[in-house]
Image 1 (cartoon, rainbow, N blue to C red):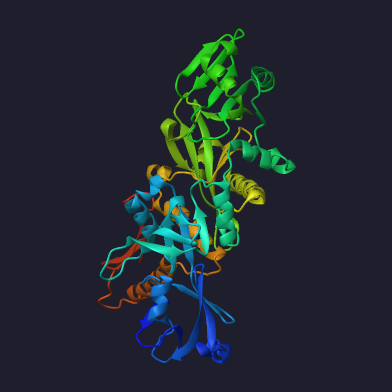
Image 2 (cartoon, helix red, strand yellow; image 1 turned 90 degrees about the horizontal axis):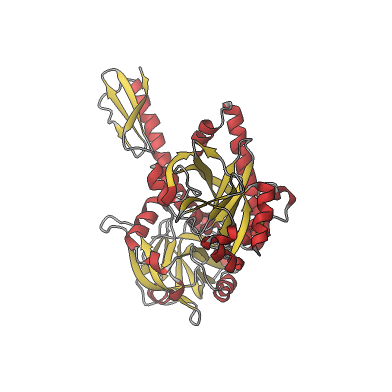
Length: 502
């Protein structure tokens, strides 16, 4: 929906195309409506114009300027005498990330394609007294301008995608102002995850036994039961501070840390690292080892669970991470290589394709249920779950991350998965905001698919002067009497010849 400024002397007016009354005849009885843009609203007189197309709406000059409506396209919703344009979505990020506008521009430009306003700001940009946001909005590319971020002051949004930790006071403020339409709302750490999920009898079977570290005796007692345990900071990421403790031979203990690697000691209390952990025991927990080794490499999986426009948890992607030989973690620093999830299943488990499909289905169901439990403690919509599959194919959930990084996608070279993972939270935010947005790229792809079919029919009928098709995903060309379909790989830049049609 294009928002036009109607240049007349009249003020406080909203103009709709006269054709809209065909599908919504009840509008004819209205003289005034309440117009909403984000948290701002204003009562306006309603008028219908013949010159407005079905995809246009008009506002008198004072309204657009006063409400701060930028020159981009919006979706329109009408319920009774309430007219809204949107969605207005706040992408709340860290101070560090907001300095990388070019990266964020590319991320949005390549992945998010629907009408609406995407705002970018930090906590410092939220003015709680004026109920407004200072930051940037995404201006899509036009025929004359490249896509860019433009600075401005905006109303509170319809929905918030939160990628930064905020104070409880700020979280509650935003929750109240958006009527709960804020996701990844509450901060939680590894220990919170255990306390939230472990009471559920089903999911408890898929969590390594974990307890708070209170003394050195806790380590000895856990080693008597499991022989190998992990000491983990309750908070933190990237594998920092994690120590593996294992019973060795001849009453010794093997310790592996990121800093010192593998070493042996006779008494845990004599180790300076263990001593430091015990002195800061309130920050640590101790966890059963459920690790899976493949050729001396630790292997774990990451599944990307996201809510979509239906507001349901779905799996967007699954990858396996193979650590360097001897490392206790599989984070980027200790990563050897990545594989797509199903490919890793084949590598690790010598099962039939049917069994591998069942394993994948089981993983998705368990992780989806874990996310539903998480929703009992806040509103979440974008979670990366790290889990392990042991030798029997049992699923062990290690961690649930709501502020995960995107570097893995540059390693695995899966741009399609990357774009899906970036796009889905914004589709969910749009749904939370009360808008059913249309993905422009999907609409364009439908047009391309129809063009593909029509062109192939022309080629098969030997029609002259048929132009070859070139799109983001494929090419259809004619070599003599042979039609060749080239499928472009999503993982690599090369093209693969996939079929010939005579």
